[in-house]
Length: 189
Figure 1 (tube, rainbow, N blue to C red):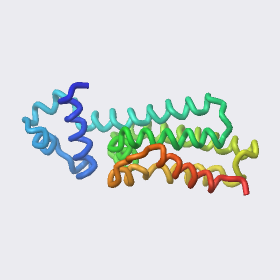
Figure 2 (cartoon, rainbow, N blue to C red):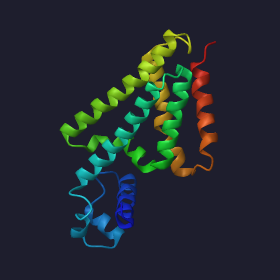
Figure 3 (tube, rainbow, N blue to C red):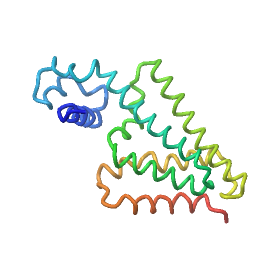
Figure 4 (cartoon, rainbow, N blue to C red):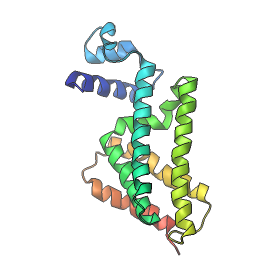
């Protein structure tokens, strides 16, 4: 990716997070890049295509990460730690893209939105299977697997808000703090 393209991506993501997808215009983006609106189309075919690429790109990263974790054969508690590390790493590396996952998916065109939600449900199912396996093996405490899945993912999904206002100085420390919090809730009593 060229420096100019990277700048474009940063500006576009920043404007979407500031104004929302619907609120950001190509005119706003051109002004922030100090260029004509027509030049914006050298970077993307449309605003919708940009949103699609960002959301599905992050979805792919999360799916690849969890698939590697599941294939590792680690005990459930170690898989959960690896899942937390995945979330922290991706959120630190791509905070604006991760932020889009929370709300901006709603602005995808209907067919893309449906596909995105299917991918999200598939991901949640992988997390639920990871937790259910840990419960079945006695590695984590018994509880409603669906509730556990939503609690774990909810704790992780909003991490971008913390990182946005508090740049991470020590990613390992942050991972350990979150692991302690999540694993204490899942620990056998």
